Length: 331
Ligand code: UDP
Image (cartoon, rainbow, N blue to C red; front, side):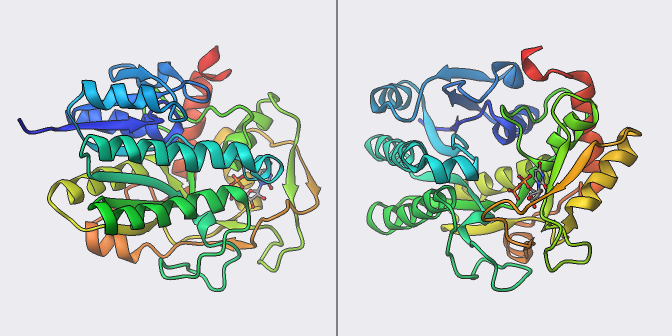
């Protein structure tokens, strides 16, 4: 029998839940595996959920034994760079050891297609921008190290065991579903757009601009904000690539535009019509001045054609969700 189920590991989180919505819209069979530590079951209504943790090999084993899985997508990672510096063991145990457990279970059940969420953090301090996939990999945090080490492990598994994979290196994931039904709800919320919206609503303290003395036009850092639905489209293309027998690939996901922290705050103020209370503070450790993607490779090889390449659109979708869920999914 043809196996056709996708296991979406960490599917109840921000990026994973938007991919599940796209999978549902396209009637692509899938099962979410999530420990709900950071994820929200309300974000995946309509998708089947198995609650479990990738740090527990026995549970993984059962999920693969009980379901006809042919492809795995992985989103279940801790993502706070600062926390990874102070508690690297937590990051290596989940973001690295957890993925090894997952890939062991895949091997045991001859599942050979893997889509992995990687990050621009694998590159470290950019030597040039826009950053292409060949840029040297020199992560500056344990978070980035765990992602790069997994990418290398995936490549070794490919050579030794025939695993075929697509690693997608996200730049700054942002936005929300345009219908306002699902969005970004992290605790704590550290990401700029989501946090600026909360600051405008008075739900978190005033925003601190981390560093105003960077060598950039307005002195604040430039980032390549990419709409979560364009990330979702890339994941669906990656699945199609692997299911049609495609070889292993690594791709950047960003638009190639850099927006400064001040430009983002201005966009939030324009979209919400509210002021973002803010102050200027020192640089945050490990923040490069510019992180801007070259995404030529995924456009050419997979036909990625982003639809939401516009900062105000990204902010307005995030705002629509935040207005519908002012306290997040917890209510
Ligand atoms: N940033 C900021 N204040 C905040 C949060 C973020 O100035 O409260 C800046 C941060 O220094 C970086 C940019 O906003 O230059 C994007 O940060 P975020 O944490 O959203 O994503 P990252 O680039 O770390 O993945």
